[in-house]
Image (cartoon, rainbow, N blue to C red; front, side, top):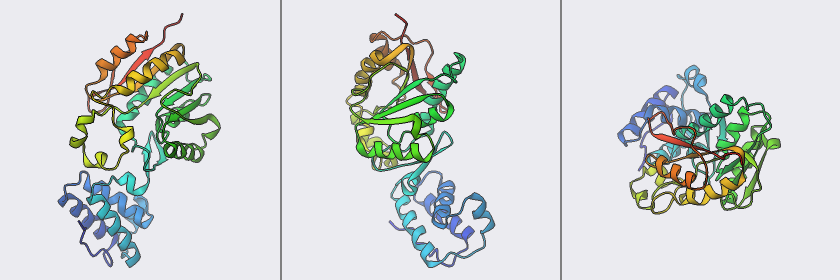
Length: 296
């Protein structure tokens, strides 16, 4: 499907409006925002630049880039994939085909971790953090950006994801406090850790067909498929985490919309306590489940 718009010769503002209308006609959510981001990227203009150069004409080479971006978005490729980057927790993260696109829902787990640490006056401590299934490094790097004395390790089974996470750590000036290991979940880690976080695969295998095509057709299935009931990764990670946590250590998971209760039960079965209720995301879904290892 083509955008079918002669962008060359249009003003920047006219091109933005035309692309937004075309995206809307093709049932793309947030067409105005997507058009602004895509036009801005094609022209290397930020929000202010789009405004100050609104009356200038689009050149032929620029029009070709816009047309390519438009076709990719109409085919439901996410804007973040087209641009190769996504903001998460105020950090500009680069992406690859081996990583999920970080989503605002996942920031709920970061918020939960920081709130617990603040309540216990541990933000300035030399904490040791593990991020299981780190992907782009989003959760780990967000936490390290807020915890200046902490160090962390991210694991992933995908070499491509780890390369992306390492690049993000370097770009953000956090490489000296972050390391990355290729392994299945936490298999290669040695404790103790003060905080373990994870956004593991949790989509039920049978639910893939109903996923938004932005996710189904572009995110790596390895990072999405949680098995028949969506809980396979939690069953694997929780026993590992329970043995790796320091006394009073915290385990925080991102979970799917109906998974907070069963994940909590998996934690309890491994001897962890649940001192805090699940934390809801902005949509009201219980998105973060928190467990603690008791001292013994």
